[in-house]
Structure formats: structure tokens, C-alpha cells
Image 1 (cartoon, rainbow, N blue to C red):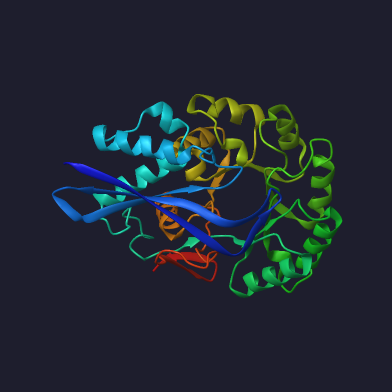
Image 2: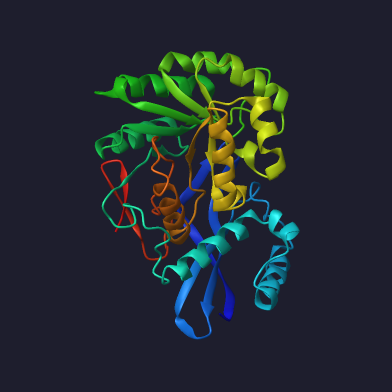
Length: 339
């Protein structure tokens, strides 16, 4: 098989800024990696390389040159230097997806799961992005009306008391008491006040909070995981961790959950390694998309579905952008379905 490779740059514009405690994003920069066999150029496998500013390891000024070097390696040897690939988790993810897609016939089907056969959906949480409080409450109400019974709020950038009052108002909604509420702080809390804030948030029956403090503070995170009145999920903490250090991180911090974003932790196989290590330590997991286009979202959804997840997943809907690739998924009453 004589494989060929190409990279197509794209920039997607958000319908409105995607805001977290790290700031607001207006555009999504990405490349689509395409793979095909010379003997059958009509069948093309695709994978997405996406960059999140100030988060993705690929967010660097020389990324164009680095990707070109990787593409040249693929053309000549059909592989990328492992040391380089370790620094480029989004490329590792894209390459895996493109090869799987090609092997399955280039139709965007990466697995034979019931989801891929359009027989089952994937239960997901409804994500409420960070806006002003009235808008966040309104968005949550819309999600509930759409059939979501697990809602996730981005927190940490607004006044903390206002965020608490927002959660209080959500609990007072009809059926609000039965909602599963997840929070994502994106590292916004300080080490000094994190536990105090978590104890205050506990009043609103929170299921879990992702990354309450900034990553790479293992001792502080271990104390928070041990003393928090509700579950802690590691998110950004996983980025850049080598496979040899996975078990050490999990044993050191002892979280209740980990959040897997394949394009940030090194791809599908790397995510499998996290699941394997976490499961042995009785640590739960769910996957979250990382602002992918419809191409990347479709790939993550199929990988997740093949694992028969027991928890609602944090998969997006592809509707964040003014323009996007042809949608592969749709939402039906809190479930993600392949169209």
C-alpha cells in the first residue's frame, strides 16, 4: 500500500466567543490530515488537528514548520518520529483517526459499535458556557427543555457568590432538584481558597468539578481530592503527562474521575492507556470533546461509543461555529446520535 498524505488548513469562527476562566476564544485554527492509497485515490481517511490557544501543546509560533516536517516524515517513512509525536498530541489523534477512517472505507466510520450503526445514542451532558448569570440560567433552562438531565456549567470567572446564586436558582427550577450538575473551573480557584469554595458549592448537590486549581500542583490537588465534599475530576492535569508518569500522577492525586480529551492527551491509544490505569485504581472517567469541528467530534464519539460508557459524556454538538464541515451527529433528548 502506497499511502499519500496532505494537510488542509482551516479556520472556524465561533457564533459567539467561547468563554472560560482562561479567557474567550473567537476562532478555531485547525488542519485536516488526509490519507489515501495511490491505487485508490477516491477513498480518503480524515483526521483533525486542532489547536486551543494557551492550552494545546501545538500552540506555538513554529507549528506550521513542525507540521510540515511531520508531513514529510509521513510521506517518506509512513510514520512520525515518536519524540516529535509526543509533543504533538493533536497530530497523534488526527493520524490515528485518518488511518482508521481509511481502513473502514473513508466514510467517517471508525468502529462497528451500535452507535456507528445508528442503533444507539451516547448520553451526554448539556454544556452551559460562561456568560452573564441571567443568560447562563436561560441556557440551562433550554438544555433542560431539550431533554438533558445532566448539565455542566463553566465557573470560576464570575463573582463566586453570583455563581452560587445561579446554582441555587437552577435547583429551584421544576425538576431542578433531580438534575445532575457538573462544574468545570478550568483551574480558576486558588490553592488557598479551593476547599472553602468547594464546601460552599456542596450546598447545591454538585456531582463533580473539573480541575478546581491549575495543573502541576500535585500535593495540593491530592489534599483537595481527599477533602472535597464531592468528586474531583482531573482535566488539564492530564495534558503533557508521559505514559510512564500516568500511574504516578493518579496514585499521587487520587481523583475520583479523569476527563479524557484525545486531541490533548495524545490520541485514542493514549486515552486507552489512561482508562486502563485509572480503572485499576477504581478511578472513573468520561471523555470530553475539545472544540473540535464535526470531523473530530465524530471520531471521538465513535471511540467513546465502542467502550459502552456508563456515565454521560462531555461531547459537543458541532453547533459552536458559523461554518463547519458537514454534520455527522445530532442531539435527541440529551443523547448524541450519528445522523
